Amino acid sequence: MDTILTSTSGLLARLWNWTLNLDGGLQIVLVLLACVASGACAIVGRRMQAPSPMDQGGAVSARTVLAVVCYILGVVCMLVMLFGLAAVFAPLIGLAH
Image (cartoon, rainbow, N blue to C red; front, side):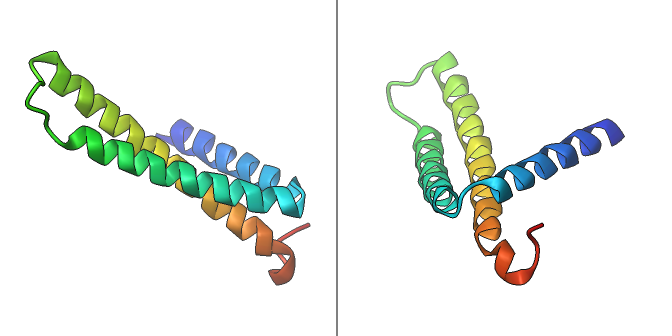
């Protein structure tokens, strides 16, 4: 469990440093793209949850796996968006180096 937490915190620290080192205009573009990607993942995930009358056997499990992957990717995009948004305002509140 400690290895997972260590690797996750290292990944988040690298993401924070990367977003801080981006130019201000690129930070805004990153936030907008991550917001759109997160919304698209939520739409696809919700669409994959709805059963189709044509689904049989393995199609239901494949749709479920795809929905879970889309929701996880949506959460990752949401975290990138939040880090990017925080990096935009970091110099104003003294969080930037």
